[in-house]
Length: 226
Image 1 (spheres, helix red, strand yellow):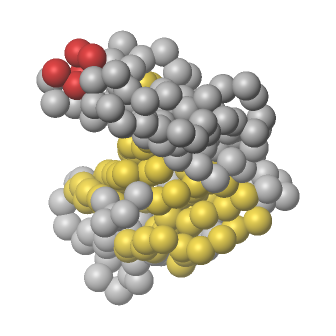
Image 2 (image 1 turned 180 degrees about the vertical axis):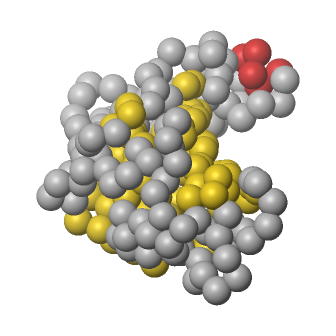
């Protein structure tokens, strides 16, 4: 009979008394137990199981009380969120929703601006309103590591930031009649957007916005950390 022993400790492999089989624990790349149950109530209600090291979160923000100025330049970061560099987790962003409200209407000759959701790293957003994320499962007790979150109706300061790929784009619609109008931009990719420690996402203009038309926005993001 063979005895299987750990090479790092004195532990030995044990056979389960009921199944008569050896059992193992599976871990993901962040060190969390795969399939671990930390909230029996959530499991009973059919809600996703909260990771042992991490959880499910959301954050909501807005451009403030003032309209975004006309002729907003291209490459202007308006909102950003970043997973801290010291985190031991990976973030999986499931959905980003942006609501645009037109304040001052434009004209038919204007060319719409474009917003993009873009990766960045190597720096933190500053100069805007700091947003506080919420844990979706209030029974959980793991605070998020996505703590660097800010937005502004003008350019955020992104010192030393290195921008990466653009993951999604959408125009800021031109409205030529009526006093106000709204437009919802919803990003729900087939696979989560994966952020490793130090990585972030920013809502940034890709094309300059037209003259005369002004607007405001609200935004919400949902993600998991494990």
